[in-house]
Each structure stands twice: as C-alpha cells, then as structure tokens.
View 1 (cartoon, rainbow, N blue to C red):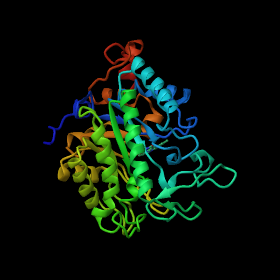
View 2 (cartoon, rainbow, N blue to C red; view 1 turned 120 degrees about the vertical axis):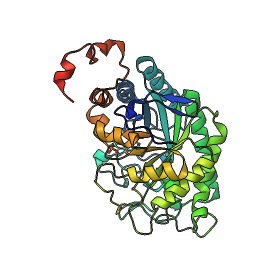
View 3 (cartoon, rainbow, N blue to C red; view 1 turned 90 degrees about the vertical axis):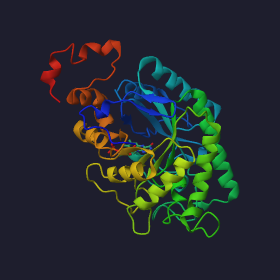
View 4 (tube, rainbow, N blue to C red; view 1 turned 30 degrees about the horizontal axis):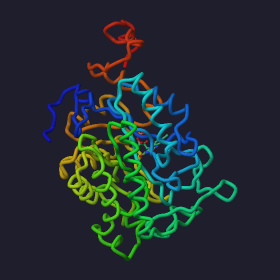
Length: 373
Ligand SMILES: Cc1cc2nc3c(=O)[nH]c(=O)nc-3n(C[C@H](O)[C@H](O)[C@H](O)COP(=O)(O)O)c2cc1C
C-alpha cells in the first residue's frame, strides 16, 4: 500500500474494502447508546443513527452489538441474539438507507468479564444485587478490577457457544444488509482478554504463549469469515497496547494483524486500553496512530486509526502521510454530527448532502465562508 501523495483531500478520497466502495476515509466510530430494550434497537437508535446517516462520513459503525444476552455490557446494550433484535435493527438500518448516504457497518461484541454492569450514567460499575446482575465469563476467573464480579473461567463448551453466537449474529447482520462487519477484539472484551496475558492465566491450549492466547479469538474470526459472502468486508477492532507492563504491546498488535490478514480480514481498527480497571490510556492527540501505522506497514492490512482525532487537518494528515487508511471519530461526531461537512469545507473537498439540506453547501451558500472553519 503506497503512501498517498500529500493532498488536502486525502481524507475525502475513495477507498475499497473487499466489495465495499467507500466515498471517503471518515468513519463514525462505534458508540454504545445503552438505549436498547432486551437487545433490540429503539426509537433512540432510529434518531441517533438516522442523524449519522447524513453526517458525511462514508461509513457509520453501529455500536457494540452483543452476540448473546449474557454478553451485553449493560441491560441497555444492543444485541443480535434473537429474531426480535434482528427485526428491530433491520427497521433502523432500512430507515437510515432511505434517508441518508452513509454505508453502515456493525460491531459484533461480547462483554465477557465486563458484562453485567451499570450504564455509564448510573456509575459504570459491576451490577450489584438489586440491579439484576448475571454471571459473567472470561478466560480466567480474574475480575476486571476491585469491586467487579469474578467471572467464571470459560470451558470448551462456553468457547464453542460464544463462537457460534458470533457466527449466528454475523449471519443476522448480513441478512439485515450491513455493508461491513467488525469484530470487537479490543477494550478488554473476551476476544481481547484471551489474547492479553493480563487477563488470561490459563494453563491449557488457550493460555501461555502468544499462539495459545490467540487460538480462541482466531477460531472466532475464521468461523465468521467462513460464513460471510466474500464481498462483505470483515474487520476487527484490535488493541495496540494494554498500557500496562506485561500487557499487549504494539509488536503483539502487528502479529495479531498478520494473523487476521491471513484469516481473510479486510481491515483493523487500532484502539487500545480497557483490559483492567487500572489501565489508563494516554491523553495525547492521535495516541493510537503510531500503532495503526505499524499495523498498516508491517502487516499490510488496511488500518483505521481512532482516539483523540478531532481536527480536519489532523485527520487528513494521518491519511495523506500513509499512517492509516481511514480515521474513526467518536466524540467529535456526538459534538458535531456534521463534522465531516465542516472538514470537507476546511480541506476544499465536498461531501454528499441530502437534497433537503443542499442549500447549505458552500457553492450555494455565501454564508459558508462567513461561518469559518
Ligand atoms: C459514548 C461512547 C460509546 C462508545 N462505545 C463504543 C463501542 O460500542 N465500541 C467500541 O469499540 N468503542 C466504543 N467507544 C470508543 C470509541 O469508539 C472511540 O474508540 C473512543 O471514544 C476514542 O475516539 P474519540 O477520541 O474520537 O472519541 C465509545 C465511546 C463513546 C464516547
């Protein structure tokens, strides 16, 4: 993958991933809304995702969508473990397609030992008696932190069930018509916590060496890839660093990305952190970008950078300088759902707008220059 010539429009150049053509390199990062009803999308999702369908980002990735009921982070998390979940999410995605121009991906997830917790605005801690908690699972019986429930160490039956749940949810996602699917291998969830020596202390074939720790996540990735049509890009959100001594390092992320590429994945979104309650992410701009760059260069896998990317120039430089193929933004889109419109204006590019809003395009609205960037 050669670097792109430095251009102020790199961010707004097209990209192909498997059979999917994206109009630009801007991605709305998955963001849990904690607003589902037994895993089913609600009118909140209709409004939230409907808004993002016209955000100017080529791809919107739907929040962590859990593959089994006990894999939800909170009682309000989205799922794809029932027919009702599938029908409700299809209603939302059909609506988004009708009213907006973005492509839609979904992040398939399982919360493992971080499941059974409160919504962030309720405290974000492990649910206590009275909060309808449930048994959590993980690679080893080690809690996420002090005050967190101790998970049950997964046995081979659990692994087979979770793997089949990922496959079933991916088939549901394909039936809904998602343009891309990404598996959550980051933020301390099971496919990451198997890989990390911080949370995986197993002494069987699934613990110890890197190869052993990779075994279960890799079987999930391979099983999902095997049931999807080749044109659907399957990717993963991975961990560039656990930010803890003894944890996953950027070298491990490169090794993981190579394995994912061999398994037929089309991209990796390089995130980091979240493996235990004492891990702290850096708070510097674009802190995951150097790790995304290594994944892109050394594993030869299309890379998406995420984390404290906020300004159009910063985002454009990441793509123009060949550090990542795409950038994902989360909080910037909550703050300004038209972030990509303003970014395009600032960089001298353009994005598609719905006809109803076309009169705000810079070419039709002298006020655009006065509004500044
Ligand atoms: C409200 C909210 C919900 C999030 N939910 C998810 C999620 O469902 N899956 C995920 O991988 N990351 C999730 N994240 C992390 C973001 O996708 C992103 O990686 C992180 O916020 C850093 O990007 P930013 O600096 O652009 O916000 C969430 C972040 C926010 C702010």
